[in-house]
Image 1 (cartoon, chains in turn green, cyan):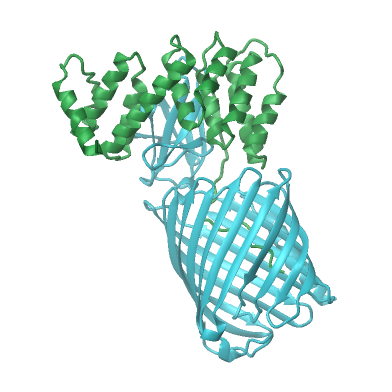
Image 2: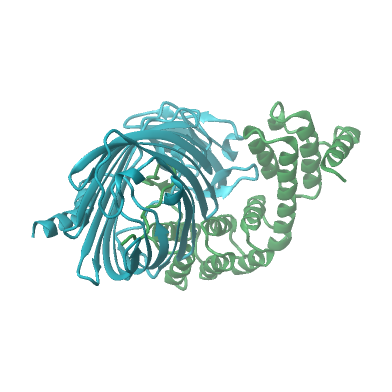
Amino acid sequence: MTPPVRLWCAALTAALLPAAVLAQDPRLDGRLDPKARATVTVLIDSARSAGLPVDPLIHKALEGASKHADALRIASAVRTLARELATSRAALGAQSSDAEIEAGAEALHAGARPAMLTQLRVARRHESLSVPLAVLTDLIARGVPADTAAGAVTTLARGGAGDDDFVGMRRNVDRDVGAGMPAAVAASVRARAMPATFPPSSVGDATASFDNKISSIGAPRDARKPHRP
Amino acid sequence: MRRHVAAAMCLLLPLALSRRAVAQRTALLDAGFGSVHYESYLPSNVLTLGPGFSARAPFAELTGSGTFSRFETGRWSAQSTLNGSVYTPSLGMLRGELAGLADLNVLSDIARAGEAVAFARAHLVDQRQGAWAGGGAGRVWSDGIWQTVARSEAGAWARLDSLRLSASVTRTDFVGTISPAFLGYPPENRGPYTDAVTSLHMSRGVVELDGSFGRRFSRPEEEASTWHVSGTLWISAQLALIASAGRYAADIPQSIPGAQFVTVALRMRTRPASLPASLAVALATGFEVRGGADGPRLIRVRAHGARRVELMGDFTDWLPVDLLSTVDDEWEVLLPIPAGAHRVNLRIDGGTWVVPPGVTAITDDFNGIVGLLVIIG
């Protein structure tokens, strides 16, 4: 089925479904064109029926709209996220919170495998996985291989690390990478440097401070010309 | 003796200037050996020592490098180059640059040459690609005789994950009297010429690869191809092994012959060079989120010279929110942001949506990038 035909089918399905079934989120009003709106509404409704969190799907659609993406791309992004949410919930367990499922979907999107999420759940059964999963996503996005990143985060979770410990590790990795250490090495070293077991977590003020990151400007130029004896 | 002092100055000038720079700095020193084969000369083994530095601020950039080479014949050469740029505030995707280039070359007691050229460039810049065009003029000094050169250039670049590609075309014209020859480049060979170069840089883990290929278009007998490949293996944060090989074209205005070379070097640096970023990102130099779980969180952005700063993310339902200017180029807004992972973009002066500085960049499914912000508590 070609994309336009698929879109028309989705729109037709949306038109034929009873109004009560359709999730008319007011946040979508006036933000999406009718084609995108119809497809996204059907996807959101399906996700809701399946018991998946729908806020991430709405946010994804709104993000696409704000970035002037076309209807097909928005629908594709929302559809992909819906699949990842379902995979995330299957990997983390049906009792997982919406925030955990969403964070798991982000991690999958970044390159983590479902088994890694399951392993993390086993390592941290009684506390939220939202922050560890977000840190896992962050590490992978920074260039740490998924296996290494998952290993580092799972090691921390097994030791009973608190949310602030995970964020602390991410900040330390960031610092190491800034000093020139490869991301994979930094993640491994920082995970190993953490104590085997952690005292009860004392989560203080949430502070995400990334000061003084001065970026270079101009068209990219070689920082150094080749050796020219 | 005086020549050795001059050579030492060539080497130390970049390092001395680096201490005076006030922005983010990187200094390095390469020490190596290799083989060089100048056109019309016999190949020679060579020991090299090359300091370099870069200093960057949101609106300015200064880079310098030097190379001292000791040939097996006992002769030596010293090169020193200094590049400086000042950037205008962005106007959408457009930004201007005023730049200056100065270099000095000394070859034992045989020849000395140098140049000073000023450029003006216009950049069209997005997050992952950009283009520039410009021109400049300056004076070239070759063994005591000055002449004027004019250069015009255009180029484009693109970034794809860890791969950076660029291509440029530069035309050099001679103005006025042409200086006498030395090192085999008589005046009659000094017609206008055009250099087209394409290059790539790739960085993955501890390995960096660079390559370039170029072609000089000139009088038929002067046309030449140039190339360069180098690999860098970072042993630690401050130490790397570099292997390079290539062929560079003659610097006709300065009468410096082209050469083929192979070198291996050890690089020591004080801190890593900044990753290349877009002009749009450059305006924002700080980003922080403060506040506890029970109330709204304060988002603060430092954006030097900005006239408007906007933020949007999942916590604003992806609607742009204006930040308020406070003091010292700082912009703030209070927003309710629940704990968890959030996606966020920043916009300065109505330009492109970018990732706030220091926040991890991920692809956004819409041909762009978005920041991944982790909030706890």
